[in-house]
Image (cartoon, rainbow, N blue to C red; front, side, top):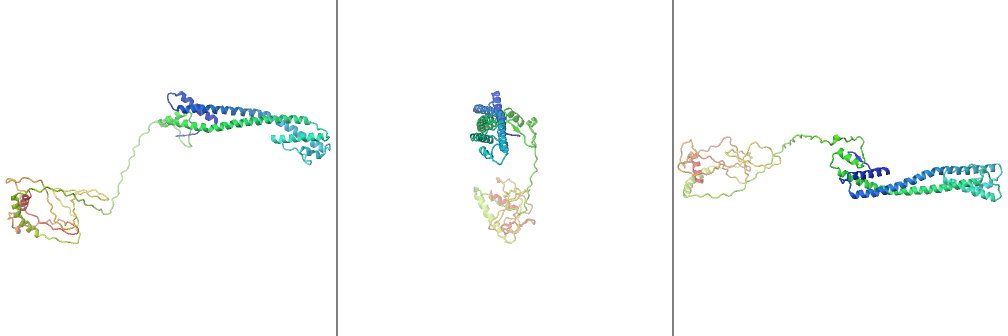
Length: 415
């Protein structure tokens, strides 16, 4: 977008205000410039044009009078310089003594003509010559002729009159020039205000249309060096450019992952209703269960064992909060850390069902039937590939697997 520049001449200022007011009157349906600003512009424009007119008039009078003044100035200088030359020639012919030159403020030994380029110097030497000639004639001297002092005095008086008139015209020109200079700053401020209102009114238009609309109200724009000129093509909507951003791949830290184990809140469950038959059955099973538990031993080992992933029918996912979360392809079982060795029993809890005489057995063992209290027939089957479970540097007890009969009895008890 080109930049705007305020007018730098008085004619340009008047043209900017006049164009804005005329265009505002022409487009009276659109209030581009406020009424207050228009009134101020009309009043200030009238004052500024009046001051400019008076300044131009006095300046023209000064110029025209100066032409006649220059001619009078040359005539007066010519007569005065010729009179001085005649005086020097008379001194050289010894018609006049050298001492009389002092009456004219001239050097008796210098026979050159003094400098009379400016009006002030011409007035000074003209006054000296007229007064000196009068003093010499009063002392009994003979008047000089060709030119006579009377003619010199006439041209000198005409020169003084024209000079005084020229000074008066110069003073008038300077006075009206000051008035114009005082009004320039308010006019510039008013032009800035008008142009701001114009650009604010057409601010919603495209660049080329906005610039042309503002130019119609007198706003002046200039292009910077090397800047492309606006065309109607700049008002057309530009195509939307879709920028595809490459996915950002985060580097995986090689530092060890610190896991935080969250414990689930303990949910209080209602105590099951125990009947007398279940109590009797539990008393019969208690010696066999106690005997199986006593055979197990707890072994402490300083070697740290790795966490074990236990497989069950339904695996519970573990929620881990770490600094670098890696994708987990398989679900792992929650590992609980305790301070004291505890016995871990992994069982599958199913919804209890009513047991009747016709209900099938939970397990159909293929091993031969044994008595309930036959401890010799209980065989501990431990998976060879089952890893050790690490609990704070200690290896917990390993529970022997029960046979089908024990499972059936225990399930009946807990129902």
